[in-house]
Amino acid sequence: MDLLDGLATTRAIRRYRPDPIPEDDLAAMLWHATRAPSGSNRQPARFLVLRDGPAATEAKALLGEAYRAGWGAKRDTHGFDRGSGADPDSPKARAAQAMQAYVDRFEQTPVVVLACIERWRAPHISEGASVYPACQNLLLAARALGYGGVLSMWHGFVEVDLRRVLRIPDEVVIAATITLGVPEGRHGPVRRLPLGEVVYEDTWGGPAPWAVDPPDTRFSSAGPRSEA
Amino acid sequence: MDLLDGLATTRAIRRYRPDPIPEDDLAAMLWHATRAPSGSNRQPARFLVLRDGPAATEAKALLGEAYRAGWGAKRDTHGFDRGSGADPDSPKARAAQAMQAYVDRFEQTPVVVLACIERWRAPHISEGASVYPACQNLLLAARALGYGGVLSMWHGFVEVDLRRVLRIPDEVVIAATITLGVPEGRHGPVRRLPLGEVVYEDTWGGPAPWAVDPPDTRFSSAGPRSEA
Image (tube, rainbow over all chains, first blue to last red; front, side):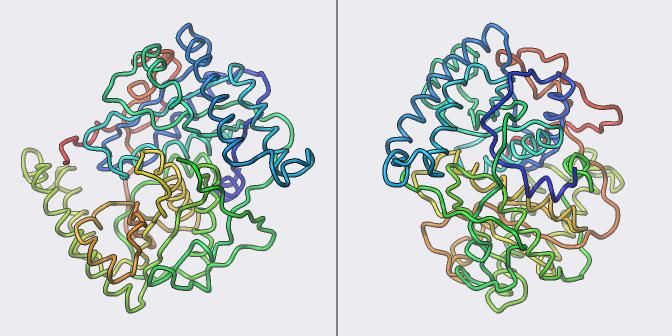
């Protein structure tokens, strides 16, 4: 797959076939993830892979609970069943169905990766610059190899138990939970805000008239900002 | 360029030819950046492009000062001129020369992009998950199109003045400063820790014997952890 095509078409994948991921492919994905940069090449990111070991099985059950709780709360606070969501064929209702199926089947997710960092200083936004580029490389490498995945933060609902089961030390931050598998069914295109709404030049809000989307770009509005 | 090759070979580029970046290429890089995911597709990332406008010129001068101060402090605290660094042909001394040239020529950097987010809740590591994947896509797209760049955080040294000059609102976080240009000269390969040192399975520290590097992988040690 072409690099630019991969960047343009990698999207969140939440429906997986039950097929496991061969270890060679998993190693290749993680190797490409770890080519990403980090501050001072400090490489604080660590990747804890959960498949079907005893701790992994227990952790996946905890995460399944967490994901169902997290989605249940979001479904409500973001009004997925109200307005256009009341029509089961609306995009909103279909998004809700897909999320519900994802969390309901969480325990069957072929591979879960916890992307963590060993914290080396006080919390600061920049620590994310040493782990999330690797997460993005992981998702892009998955796409190159015929897999798909998505990053989320719902481990927060069960973090105390999860740390105990997986023996994650206190100084380690769980930066993301990434689920991976072979995509099942069809998935729509990536949709984003028009480029001119997010690119400025010279000053904040300054117009960048050259920042135009290629033909056939599909758009979205900005997602909800209501989350706590 | 192949997607996996791009992931494997994109490295920090700090030496640029003076050539400007055509607007079409700049738009393409930013468009691919904005295909990256964000939490709930909320898309809080904004990209402020600095080329040769009046505010950009002033901002680049401020950033040049900041980068020289930042590198000066790091050169000292990380001991770049001590130990093996005393030999001007050592890898450490050559890294220091490259960094010095980068900061000395900062004002000539063809394009500087400030990747920002509009903060929508209290600071949390997860906000980085809505901007750093886009930064990584930007650097990967740059590679695909024959450019190179690097992400750093030294804007912090001049942030008050920078915000004033660029009219950046208080609720906006500057998540990264990314410099971009046509690479000049030769650059070495990506070097990282062996995969087995950063991938665990089933529990924290649990061995993942399948997590092996491909042949010809080049390695590094972990960078310094001494930074405040």
